[in-house]
Length: 177
Image (cartoon, rainbow, N blue to C red; front, side, top):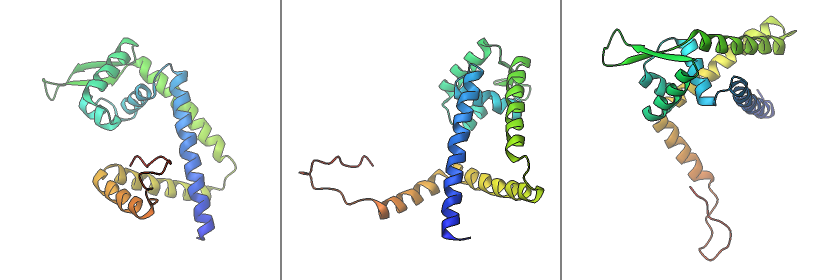
C-alpha cells in the first residue's frame, strides 16, 4: 500500500468515526435519550442482564453517574433492576420490553443503513471490509484496555512533536499540556 493510499484510508476512517458518532447522537435523540442512556440500553440489548458496576465499566462512568442513569431509564420504563440470583447483595439490570423494542427498532434502521451503503458492492469486497473492520475493532479494543501503554506512547510521540515553548515574555498562549 502506498503512503498516499494509507493517508486516504486514515482520512476515510476518521470520517467514518465522526459520522458514526453523529449517527449515535441523532438516534439517541430520536429515542428521547442522552447518548449515555442510549449506550446503556444498547449494551443491555446486546449483552443481556448486567450488574450496575459491569455496566458502569462498559460505559466508562462512575457508579454514582450510572445509578442516576439507571434511575432515569427505570422511570422511562426502559430498564429494570432485579435481585441478582448469584449474589443477593447485588442487582442485575435488564432492558424492559419497551427498551428492547426501542433499541430493536434503531438496530433495524442501523442494519438497513449498512445494507444500503454496501448495496452493489462485490461480495469479495464485503469480505475484505469485514476483515479490516474486525482488525481495527480488535486493535482499538486492545488500546482501550491498555491506558498505561497508550498514555506512554502518547507522551513519547507528543514530546517528540511538541513545539518549542515560547519565552515567558512572549504573548502567544502557552500549551495546556
